[in-house]
Figure 1 (tube, rainbow, N blue to C red):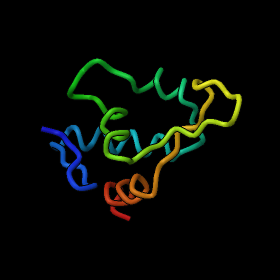
Figure 2 (cartoon, rainbow, N blue to C red):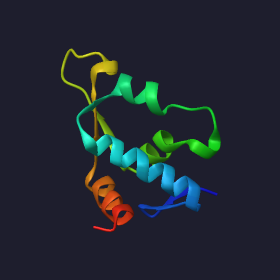
Figure 3 (cartoon, rainbow, N blue to C red):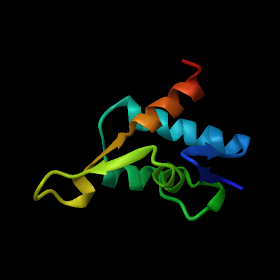
Length: 90
């Protein structure tokens, strides 16, 4: 089962690969929350990259004052960048 433990994400191979793809997608260019939800939200518990990344502290949503949530930025945290580097073998 997938879960965050002590700041470390533990997952099966297919879930870890999906999470790695998600982190790479976020890191590739600036992303907005609305765009992220459109591309990555799912009701399938096996493909929950967004939910897993948020729960494990790998991404954050950063909104400007007066900005709607859909326009808020989705960014990798330091932990997320480290996890992406692990996945990419950097």
